[in-house]
Length: 253
Image 1: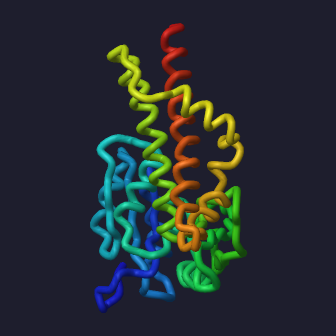
Image 2 (image 1 turned 135 degrees about the horizontal axis):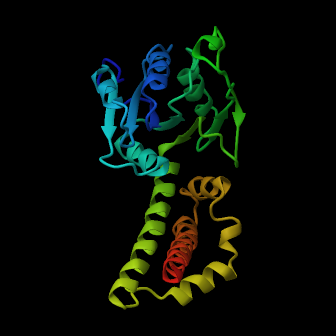
């Protein structure tokens, strides 16, 4: 949903869903009834088979569909690429929010730059049990995000997406090398650097990404690109190791 001035929305609410048509209706009903107009709603349908596509007719909802089921991370990244908002809010398709949900997320991001905001989630058995309950934001989180109710600046998500691309690229290149009996990347160097710097222990932590983003304007200009390249080594190593492990398992069968 975009405001009347056609300016970019402050927030983009992203919902990745699969075969939850009826629950998604409740979710969208609450999201369309917010106290602020400064947001848009993006639904990424991960190849549902329950006619979720019918919800494409709901006005003020931007709907995208994967031809095949690709998984939640892929669907969320697709939503991020399509998002226009400065803030990305993730909500699961079985979550019902309060009227100030989006307003609260936006307000907390005004407190400081490059924050990760995490809110509470109350589990209920039936939509009618929600009553007048308001899902309030409870604070900030550095690690262990509850992705049913979390927001982050789009800048931070762009870093995460670039890392995931490097991870997937490394997996694919190993598969190609195996198929054509070629060696496309210096795997020994990548794995050695990853192990030496113990990247698996910290490179995937949200606080590492937050530190990376917070130093974008650091006076010593090489800090951010250097750290970014170091972290990429982890995702390259992770992709290669997972692909090699899968190929080994297949060769045994």
